[in-house]
Length: 118
Image (tube, rainbow, N blue to C red; front, top):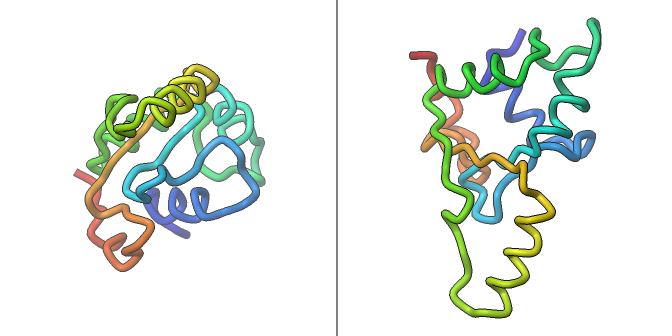
């Protein structure tokens, strides 16, 4: 069976879920918390992705594996029209959480083996 970071990677790479995706840069995981609770954590065994049903437990796992929460505005555009479009998108996604781990990067899947539990 796969460890937490490997399961997370498969989840982010999957087209099956709308609640989790790579940030634009591919360096962060974006999670729509409300949808994620329903779509991923709300699954019953044997369709579980993670053997947990609470968002708090999932976030604890992220922290145990060295993920850090990023502020919502960590990657904003310089131009005003782009900024305003991003603001509108951010309001629509007000419950989007961004988590970063230097060893969890879309462009460098080989780094995944460095994702160790603390």
